[in-house]
Picture: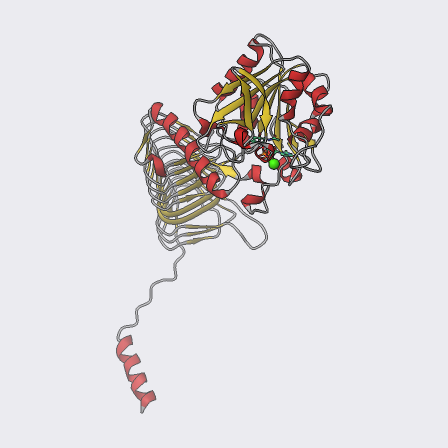
Length: 465
Ligand code: UD1
Ligand code: CA
């Protein structure tokens, strides 16, 4: 792209009435990301500086959601049309001269290569405006592209089109490359003298020609790329297409998906080769999975780093956790944020962990809660062990040093520390620190009263007499 400056404007002010939602349309997720994040990422990948997001309906929520992105915001307080929307971005682009990409916040499927092609064509033919078009079997509702041979004359909206123009099947996708600042001068000359009483961005094309400048077009090979989302049916369709793209990329990179149609992977998830994902797996957020892992049906993994050779068994839920290599988790385990497993661990069924640092080789195989805890290496946590970390006001920490054996049905009333190589007898309630190499037990001595059942039987007979 020969050093020409690039910037982008993303239109995202519209209401999206047909979504029937309290949430701004562009924040509805497509394959795990708010749809506006896709054109935003695209602009970043192409090196647009700056990217300006035109917001209106639900502006604050859109700003909040994209707060960590490198974008500027421009407010379109009243939605007076697409031409007006671009004008609202003008002051955010003061001093910019070059190619201005115009993208839509509700068009998430556009590919990077397509946009690069649009920019290349625009710059190669020295056009004032280049429009991305598509051929549709049913063009109803879209602006139609008016041509004279190869030359693009302009665009006419559905509501303003003559019957002959309505028969045209080449439509305006609403994506363009413009020469800036020229496009703003052209916009200032527009009026809203049309069927919808709006300022049409599309009128810029005819205006450019009237000014003696060239208008070009690039036609999409695959029209679905420019699919705009207006309702929840289209939202589901776009999600399915995006998921298929993501899943295919992982399969090409060496990941096995047992049932790609039922595997849900967010866009920025990374997965190592030879990992196998079973049906119904959800990998969400900023998750990284190592190589040679197996993730069984209906596991949900969000914002986690998972090492190599890890097995996550069915229906486990992992959030904000780090899992070291060769670890076995689940089935039905719950790793909550702040869990860090060093590796070679076993976290079995119905085990919940939270803010827990767990050393190499340590195992908790069944029915356990480990919260606000630090466990050393090679600790064996028996069935039914509970860290009592909360006194109703504050959280307290349990520390269990290396090589401790914890018998079943133990409670650790935190804060408490168990020294290395100690043994906690089954059924113990630990309330005080235990030095290394000790046995700790707290049990009411077992009492046996022989003949109890016989005596109880006599009592009952008495009562009923
Ligand atoms: C527009 C095009 C039409 C094209 C179609 C493709 C015009 C006049 N028409 O039509 O040729 O075929 O897109 O989908 O441009 N928006 C704002 N502020 C506004 C109006 C719209 O930000 O005042 C945003 C919307 O949120 C949306 C985009 O611009 O992201 C397109 O607006 P929309 O109303 O869907 O345009 P159409 O009338 O469908
Ligand atoms: Ca409209």
